[in-house]
Length: 216
Image (tube, rainbow, N blue to C red; front, side, top):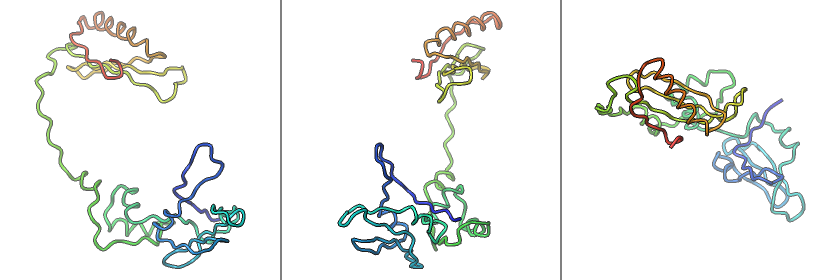
């Protein structure tokens, strides 16, 4: 059984059907032939029919794809990716690497390699060297002189119903502590517990506390 993939399919909330863009078919090097009774998409190179659509009623301007058209498709997929797409999906490999990938099982054999492939933006940015960060003179000179704190929200609640996590990072030692919270309003209580731990366990006092944007 062969699989036919159609992409992209635009989704509109509340719509009972999926809409296909004829322009996307044309951009994938496909041709359109038809009339008021039927529209068929053909491969521009092999001229083989890929997909046929029909109006639900005479003179209807919306054409429908019948389920049997998908099941009886004579190709493995009607979605064709070009060299640029595979280059991005596989982590920006060179042209020679992609040519060797054609030897892999189930890899497309219809990939067209450009004679002169321009340097893509991802490759250019990946090969650029970043400037060194300037030395900072605001480092702490002793433990807990400067503490950074931030509050993050989990995308879903944990098994024990925790929704937030608050972090405390000592600028001098780079040691960090975390506390799990069920409510955002528990942040102050978590800081009081952390402050008490610093005083009792390390015999120190927090000098400056820098809060993240989620806590301010």
